[in-house]
Image 1 (cartoon, each protein chain N blue to C red):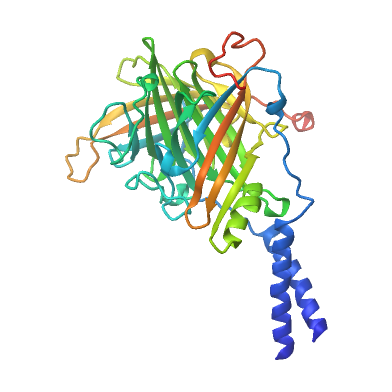
Image 2 (image 1 turned 180 degrees about the vertical axis):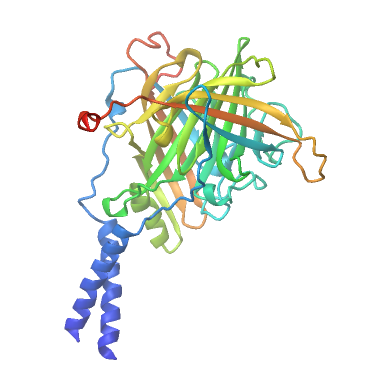
Amino acid sequence: MKYIVSLVLGLLVGVGIFAAGLLFNPFIAEQGLSPLSVTNAEVITLNFANVPAESIAYTNDGESLQKPHPEKILQLWEAPIRMTSAMVTVMRGARNQAAGIGVKFMSNSESTRLLNGEMIVDSVWYVYLPEHGSFFIEQTENYFPFIREVAFPAWRSSANSWRGDWLGDLSNGPGALGTATVVGGSGRLEGLIMEGVESMTVQAFSSDSGLVSAEGRLLIELPASEFADDDELESP
Amino acid sequence: MLKTFFLGIVLGLVAAAGALYALPAVDQVRESSIVTVAPNGGNAEVFHINIPMDRIMSGVPGQTATVPPGLQWPDDESLAGVRAELFKIRNARDTVVGVAVRGVGEKDGEEIIDWVLHVPARGSVFVNMEVVPREGGYRIGEIRAGSQEFASMSGFLTERWVVNESGGEDAPAGRIELQATYVGQLEPLDPAESIE
């Protein structure tokens, strides 16, 4: 009997060591600086609220950490869309002025590989900026660094919350440098193929209710010579 | 006994690693796609949206009865011509398979209508519609971009409003019918295969 107990205890300790090793694995590299942060090209910078209650609308299966907003919005409970969430938000320019509307669809990805430090979400954006036109963003996002550095410490804390200043790039592909693909649809952006990066800053997170204070940012790199005289949405 | 404990640790490590490697962390539910061959080439797939039950959100400036209740659409002057509607989309078997957004924008008299269809297990399609409906009351638009399964496809999407005349009490008022016609990119055959 005592051998069985010690074997079971050993198994539990082994699983615990593995989980700790996964979370604190030094070989899972940080993504580092976004390639678009150091580009010389013209960029469009768009900021948006990442907290569902601060967005225009947010919905998911209704059983996830983040609660749908407004409260009576239709929930995505059907099996094929249960792992999907949708958000509609105001996109703001570099000077915090309303620049357009953005709609984001996010679905948990089957390419998630926790062993490699990849918690992947397939997401697309539809953004319409009255001054510039509409565009579509396709990307895979990796939430593993966020889970490791924000969500896990919040879960471990006695107050079930985390406060600090976390900044990370979420975009993880399909571009070779971890950039998203951006396709212009109409207006001045029509026909343009661009690259983009989505990042997130988090100041407060609760393991009971999700993001408490957070902001998202989209950085879109314009092809050379486009928008040369445009300073309205240019990044700092 | 200590040896058994250490053996347990090793087994625990191996079991956890094996489980993570072998078991999928995410397994999306797939509805088999209902695709037909279009008479003029390409493949056609029909989606529809039952109105009003599949409407998730209707963002229109200045509306009084909002969908969903409590929605606060921005009243910023710069967004005066922007409308967006969010829907669940269904396949030909009337099963919900994805979500979609229909964006409408108007600036200086120029209007745009866009669709993005997002089918979680398959990918997304971005379509620019012609503003003026064609004879027969339908609009047509070009597939501008796609992701995953739709990444290498081009083609068209048509939208039309179909009124429900069944008169049933719980029947929808009608449906938005979306027919996608996909044309895949030609990919050269492997030389070895073509010789065979």
